[in-house]
Length: 138
Image: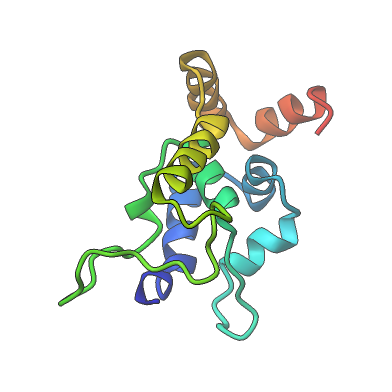
């Protein structure tokens, strides 16, 4: 699982370059702030990782390519990404599993209007972002 070795540093870099706080990322992913902090923990014993849905939510809602947070280039690898415990489907039928994956991706895909709002939100000051989220009841 080499692709997770640098996840905590990559996530922090993406979050900070997007001017997002731990709280902002928690809101995007539907988790609590402590969980996001554990994703970025420098101590591997205290570190945790997001689930696939949370990872997809983060990448899609922040318009971040998956390869920016995961180290997908493994020397000598076959290009196959292994995600232990990942099951999109209870079916052994690959077509059904891919169909369910497509539905999950479509569920979190932003409309053009939502993407524009996210871009504007990311450019706002911390104070303005918190005020917007308070108005939304978050």
